[in-house]
Length: 569
Image 1 (spheres, rainbow, N blue to C red):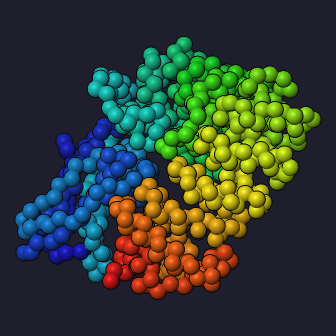
Image 2 (cartoon, helix red, strand yellow; image 1 turned 60 degrees about the vertical axis):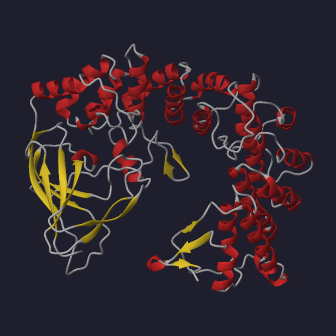
Image 3 (cartoon, rainbow, N blue to C red; image 1 turned 90 degrees about the vertical axis):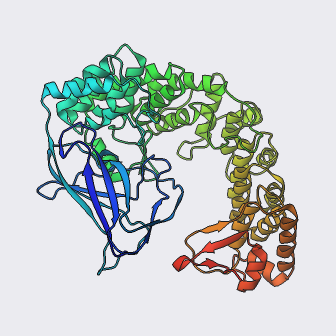
């Protein structure tokens, strides 16, 4: 930390507030020394809209801290700047972006920013401190505060229901004193008011949301169902609780589920049925999640009806930028709903349309469900039928390992016109342990333009133990301007290298440079001993100069102390 660095906090409008107020402040960094120093900001605001390198600790008079808000930091631009003697750097901040202000009291606010400096025991990072008082509002003040928020008709970006980046000021009304006013506001049709209700951590708030499930307006029903569903005891998948629009820890899931009231189950299921019939993707997804978690066998028919509509919304995904990771519309949520129902004994009808066939394919792919009679005829008859979502399910439904006619069908799926089906086929081929799939998978790595398909084919080759086939295919891709960076990341892992914390590289190599780089890798692996090491899954020894030549300045590992490997010459 440089000498002369001083920090301070100042609050807009003083230091006395009423719970529910927006609490804004300014963090000031001053240079009180005799020399310039460098300070760094940025690199921390993408995805939030505010700088997350500021660290807040807010404690009451007993030392109990207000809970921290959570967000996803997607990075941003950063860099050092000079601060001359007598100059200041000022950053406006909002307290509620960093901590949840959910109770009254007198609080000590401490704020730290690293500014790119290295702290030491002798010279720690400077801490800006202040005290504020937050009073509990009366019922009349709570009503006025809510009406003031409602009167702001200026639309705000980022007000996605229930998202951690939601910016509505309703989220600051997270104390029970606001609950009656919030419920009245929500009942009038303002779904954003439920952003405040869902932050009130009481069962009374759960009951308020439950009452809103009976509203005549579908948008209110959806919002209430969305937030009540977050308090359901979660379905556990692979050891993790499934949550709607939120990835919480098991501890957070347990705290949320402690607010559940069993009497909400039946009204919530009824609301889910209504949402499944709405035809709106986000409403259907919410309804499907509820059925997945607490639905009963008789709810399967409503899920199948919604699935029928989703199966009609399809196209062949052949473009390199097409989304092949998700089913169209609410498809993924409906598939999960059927999975949850199957755990509780639901089985698809024997006869029906394309939606029933889809549900039966999903059952065939579920190892917990015994295969019923006639499954072979069903799978063979519909294996190549549209929509692609059905064909993906058919590939997953193949017996493990696929042999005979099933092996032939899987081979055909590796050439499907839809890249989502092709990717699924790559995954199943990799699980098969059948060497017959090595060459077609390697050819996909050599020629395919959809990044996710190429990655899946590459991983499948590794699962088959075909390490050299994958490596040879990636070497050929080094001339491809869209794929050579991915190829270098793969090939780098075949070499002996220091432990790293990531990698970096260029994506602007000219065609001639890419072709020359490919030739270097071909020459390097022309030695049979190196190919044998790769095939055995062992790293290939390489000198720093050899690695530097192979990577051609387009790739390097980030290692300790800010260094790179291979180092620059």
